[in-house]
Image (cartoon, rainbow, N blue to C red; front, top):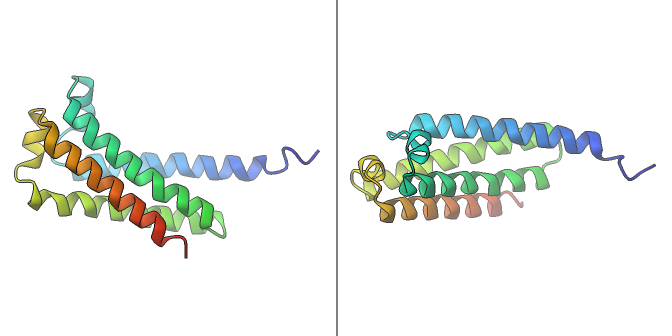
Length: 132
């Protein structure tokens, strides 16, 4: 029965991807000056757009890391590289968008959309660079 022969590897990679995503969220939520989860729970669309773009911006290169890695450890290393890149994208956007956290707190969607788009662009470029 070869249909499920890859199930152990799938489960290992999926578990690692969930753990890396949780680590990414914990790191990103700590790195930002605003409290996205609380804001999203309160219905703040700007926070949801920024955080959603960031999460997708991380998931894209993480999926590339899994796809192109030679081993689970290799995928973890490149997943951590993707994490660093996404946090750097956030820190690079802060000077370009004055008072970014306050503006997201106040529900301004324009800077949140740009931050989310920058996160997606960073993730796409990151993923492309992993296809060596």
